[in-house]
Image 1 (cartoon, protein in one colour):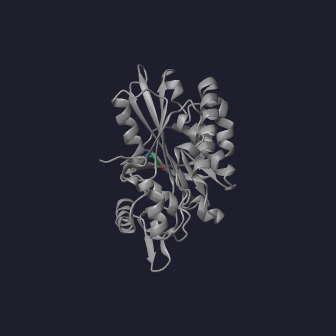
Image 2 (cartoon, helix red, strand yellow; image 1 turned 90 degrees about the vertical axis):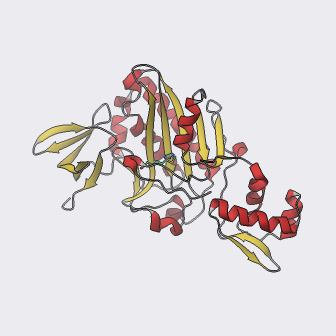
Image 3 (tube, rainbow, N blue to C red; image 1 turned 180 degrees about the horizontal axis):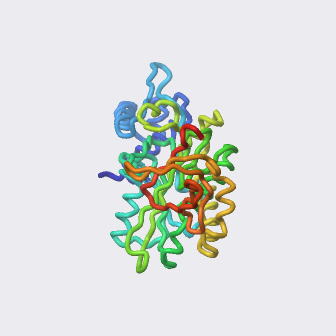
Length: 328
Ligand code: BTN
C-alpha cells in the first residue's frame, strides 16, 4: 500500500500547471518547476503511469492532459477548522487510511481525502471505482460518545448533508434511496460507507466514507457494475471540487450537529420527503433471501419500514439491499 503525500516527487506542481487541459511547452513547464525539458517528458510519463492519466504530446505545441482536471488543494478547501485534513494523492482507500490513522493514535475528528483510490471500498464488499482527480473520496472520523443513539440513523443523516450539497451544485433532481445511496434518474451519483472501530458501549469511532461522482467521464463506465452518473454528466460542465468539498463539510457540520442534539427522529420527516422510493413496491434482499413489500418509510432509528401483506415490519443492517420490484 502506498500513500503519496502532497507534492512528493514534484508531481503535483506539474499536474497543477497542466490541469487546465491546454497545451504547455516543455520549456515553459521546465522553467516553472526548475528542471530540463528532457526531464519534463520523463516526469510526465511517470505521471501517466502512476495516476492512469493520458497526456498528449504534440510537436511544436507541447503537452496537454486529455481532459482538464479540477485538482484539490489544501489551501483552497476552505474546511471548517474543527476538522484537520490530510490530502493524499493516492491511497488504497480513504476509509482504510482513516482506520490506520486511528490505530496509530490520531485524534478525531479528522478528515482524509484523496485524489485517487486504488482499492476503494463500497457497501456489501463491492469495490468503488476511484479514478484520479475526477471524483471525491472523503473520510471523516468522529469519536462516538453518546452510545448507539449517536450512531442510529447517522448514515441517513450523512445522506441528507450530501443531498443538499449535490443540489447546491445544481443537480436539482437528486434523491435518496434507503439506506444511503444518492440517485439521479435511477443512476447512482454518490454512496456512503460507515465503518466502526471499537465498541459503541465503550470507546468507539466511526469513519464516515463518502464517494461522489463529480467530474467522472464516460471512460470509466465499463468497469462499474451498476448504472451511474456524475455531476459533470448531468450539468455538462466541470465542477470545482475544492468548492464542493468545503460545501459538503459545512453541510455535514450542520446535519451532524442536529443529529447529535436531537437524534435521527428530528430529521426523519425531511429524510422521507427526499426518499425516492416512498410508497414503492420493493424487494429487500439479505444474501440469497429476500422479502417483497411496499415502502412505508423509516423509523426513528433509520430502519426501513415495509408493509408486507398488510402488516408492518422493520429492517436494518448494512448488508441489506433494496430493489424496485419489476411490477412496481
Ligand atoms: C457504496 O457502496 O455506495 C458506498 C461507497 C463509498 C465510497 C467511499 S469513497 C471514500 C471512502 N473510502 C472508501 O474506500 N469508500 C468510501
